[in-house]
View 1: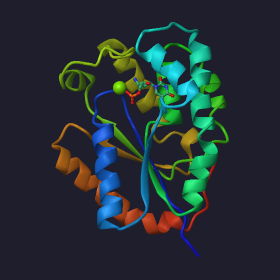
View 2: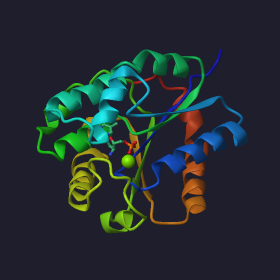
View 3: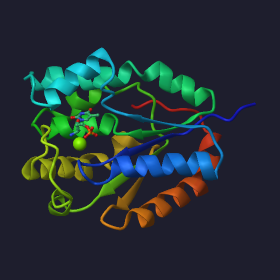
Amino acid sequence: MIKRGLFILFEGVDRVGKSTQVQALTNHISNVQKLQTKSLRFPDRTTPIGQIINQYLQNATNMDDRALHLLFSSNRWEARDSILELLNNGTNIVVDRYSYSGVAYSAAKGIDFDWCYACEKGLPKPDLIFYLTMSSEDATKRGEYGGERYEKLDFQKKIKQIYEEKLVDQPNSKQTTWKIINANRPIDEISNEISSIFDSEFKNIQSSPIGKLE
Ligand code: NYM
Ligand code: MG
């Protein structure tokens, strides 16, 4: 019988190095562990819904905050079947942002936290979440922001606060393990830590069923 794939998620504010670490862990799982792996990211800007989100992020359109929130959530729901298919076929997925980004960014705008979380319930649950964190000032110093919406120090601080006070290791993320990773270190040091956590945990996780966000 084939073992199911794992759903590994990277979360954190902008500029903490998630995409670099997604790539490093994907390489580790396929080249060192010799397991099937695919990386995904949200928003998935390639779908029709993702294109509307992309236009908003690039300041080409404006939108009601709640309508936008629901589009981000829809962009995950439209990926649900393919995520489950990959996992059930034994492919590990390494994902750059998911429901927790959805809640953190929208709640940081002042939208009710529980309302933000409600539309995520029922989506496939990540098995392991790496939360990359560093001071917002240090993240800002990592070079110019790309000019997308949200890339402002004050707003980034609010998002970080929502993650750390309301999401990381909180009851509504029960049964999911969050690993808090100090992202203010050399890339290799971070990726070595993440790879060794994966190596020590993946066998245990494979034998548990795929969960749902609740
Ligand atoms: N973002 C991402 C949200 O506001 N809600 C969501 O549900 C998701 C998945 O999109 N600044 C925001 C966070 C980012 C922006 O993501 C684009 P990225 O990883 O910077 O391409
Ligand atoms: Mg970004």
